[in-house]
Length: 245
Ligand SMILES: [Zn+2]
Image (tube, rainbow, N blue to C red):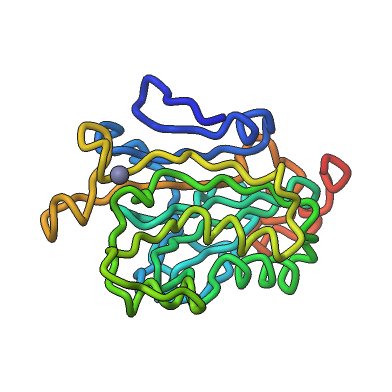
């Protein structure tokens, strides 16, 4: 369901089937694959805060999720073990990029993103497709009981070291919003195990690099919308291609 391109970027095959959409999960081998592009990003703080990208790009504040529909702007997040989660409303052509570590997942960032897509753009859960990219796997995400307890409140931890499956937790959170399970795609690639391909904070510590994942609506696919985005100084031109949508 995920394929690695020659550019070292992983892509979800379901997402690739939408011609108007572009996306990817970068690796340590994908170089500056977003170089020269208009990027909307955040100062990531392990929160459940979501920002709406309204015709802007650059660093749009603090938070861990971006939602937008501006053609030609890529919504980008950086990870090294946390989960990169890309979402697409295939009916309304709205996209979201979410940085989800354990704190963000406990704070409900997956559900929050779906909620905000609904509030801001009218997205319905049943029209969403989600790609959960490479992140630290259950194999390697050993935590203290204080972290594990937030995922398994009922469970008693004896001598065993608890392991948390962030992908599974995110999957469950997204299913609860009403997104069909068959519309949620998981890379299931562990960033700590696969050191040749991914940066890992757990493996490399502070010096670990960060991998860029991004999603956006292609510029050429949205001529109608682009026309509406003409600067207000050119009256009359803005509605010409309205029907191209
Ligand atoms: Zn692993």
